[in-house]
Image 1 (spheres, rainbow, N blue to C red):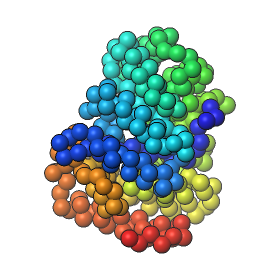
Image 2: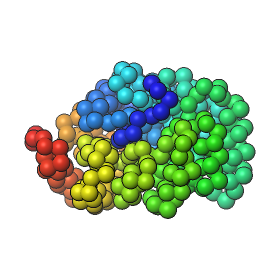
Image 3: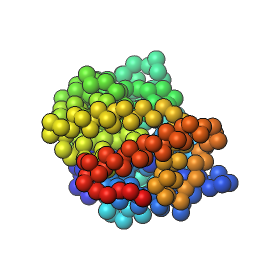
Length: 310
């Protein structure tokens, strides 16, 4: 694959589990094919949506390797699983994930410094970390909201873009001012920004963002693909507004609700999660997921010209 990652939609992958709480690799294979069939441009495996903080290192490595193998070169696969605290453990973790053959290892921005520590500490630890890993490992950055969200400052963004080591930034700032500054700083560098927030997605695309990498690609991947492809069209403002309202469902017991949505799509997975009790997905929330799916099918007919009944 070329060093430049393609623009488009990069779903944050879910992890299916079996009834006895093991990783369900049959379900993961079906899910990988679903993302590809939905027109994803790349796959982000082993991320917060994958419940990575509840996966041991062996599971994280195997999931990344499995998804990369199942993708069969049809699209790039990146993976995180960067959850350790010490620089030594992080370097071991990064080497292990890189050894799966994924196209980049994504570093979590809150792992480099505590919430009250300044940018200088973050940069110092990143420098130390980069010295511990091979220079040919391509890296990315993820403003993971857990355990706290460390949004990339102008100073850190400039340092990372200038290093030449980073290719992918999953932005979760949900703030167009922050996004705009990052895009200006990254212009001309290897580092591309992929927005996780629907409300700011359209203006970010028009300002130079490479694409979308967020929760709703687990439910409305093809519609996001249309928005990212045709963002310059004036009428895309209507679709962007509709998707922003649909995205409010993220707040209702995610990722269980996304797994329930995918069940309605016919995927052979259950709703079991490690991060929350799937049984707490209420009947009302289930009904809202069914409504969302029906609404999504109607939108696909309108915006993609396809008969998606089923």
